[in-house]
Image 1 (tube, helix red, strand yellow):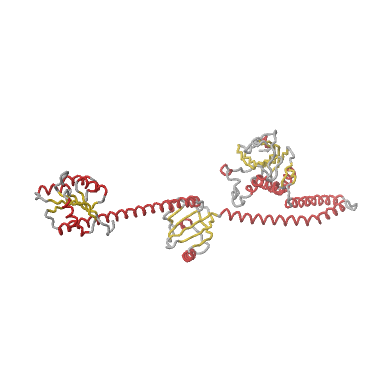
Image 2 (cartoon, one colour):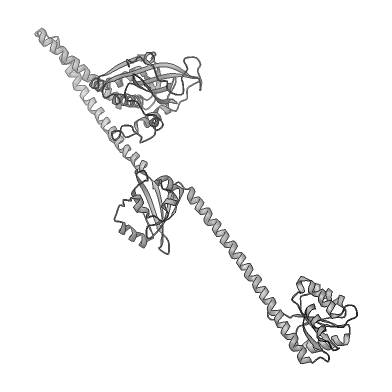
Length: 537
């Protein structure tokens, strides 16, 4: 109800003349005046209209004023409605007490004094208007509170959703104060660094992570404060002491009291880039070696021909002819090395037929000096002479890596086994060739077998890059083959077996046609016993 809204005043009396007189007296108030001649009419008006003040006669034929007031007060809507009694007879104190108990707020005696009636009605009209205004204000305030509560609930839901999304991010997302203490630590940070959220909140973040900044920390903080953002690489330590390199982006809020840091682990990426640079260096060295071998090959042919003529010259005695034979043999060996070097770095553009026994023999020739120096006995068993279509350079790389690893695993001597045989893979109904590289070295620990083919994992401490087996497995997978490993530990020593399975028609990105028959190939590499491996263990 607004301040200028009119208040409804209900006048109840069984005498129309009295009602008319009340109407004339109260007309000056400017409110809505409603007349009722009986109690029934009054109740009907009350049920349909918001009444501010009820002015009624005590003596009425159907229900007297006291009884009507009792009925009105029983309704919840009218329990606080102002009721004023008008009585033409003298009322005793007991009558007045009964009236007040019935809900009356005041009495007016007849004859009615117009000024007194208007004054009393005006007071209760103003009270009713202010009550309704207050109720409206309370309702509006309650609505605003509800709207604000709902708005806060929606914001809280949005913040919770954002926090859950941040928590699901794989990147490490952290919020810290300008004092360096962590206030938010998502699950990505837990996975990267190893500390839980409960452990890190309230801790000096960069002190705990032992962060190494690319510039003095004060300069970075000043740049962050001025430009509101900063990004760069940081070196940090995880809970287990591992060193990681992260690409970090920092952003400070408008109030300059909170810093958001998003970090991504790029350690493996940098290692891969470094390994790629090393591989490019080795490839460049290989190309240079191939060029040199090519240049050496021409004069070497001339020297070989000349030595042949000298060796058969009649002027030579037996001693000189013997030395000439030795020199010719060494020249043939040099010629063989140059041809191998050229074949290693002269890759074909299209897959070609590759004879596996010849390829394995070439690899063993290159490892001849290492085998001799480590007093390693060689045991070869070629039960077939399969041919696969592929790129000989990358296949040589695979077997050179496997044989080289086997030699390094036997620094104090042992036996190197190279076994080649035809098998069948019944799981995919195809034939193929199994090449097993066996050594009697130190073996591979069970916990290392699970990570053996992961990039950057090496059992050679700082001597290996950890990429050889990973690259080798990728090459074999190009041929739709498999590369597996297993170590057998017995009373007489260890046997480690790396096994390569190549489909009979295997080639890069070429799936073999299904074939039947042959010997079954197991999904894991069988560890040979003494008689199976042909090794003197």
